Amino acid sequence: MEYEEAKKLIVEQLTKKLKTKSKFYFNDLSKILDMKPREAKKIVNKLVTENVLEYWSSGSTSMYGLPGTGKQSGAEHED
Image (cartoon, rainbow, N blue to C red; front, side, top):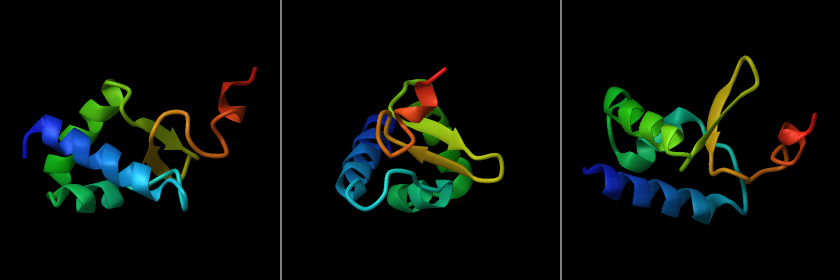
């Protein structure tokens, strides 16, 4: 799967699921891409680097989402 194709698929699937949740585990993204974790990780990292996805961590849990979505979005940018 080419990068642009993977990017389109991830954005499309996450946008569809925004009504029910805004943050996704890496395994969710890997399943969407239908790739092994090592292959998916390269694409997910590139999506984060290009600000297509944002990385979120609570310290014990790491998740990914579309930038500017979710309940935490506004609070994360406060001083």
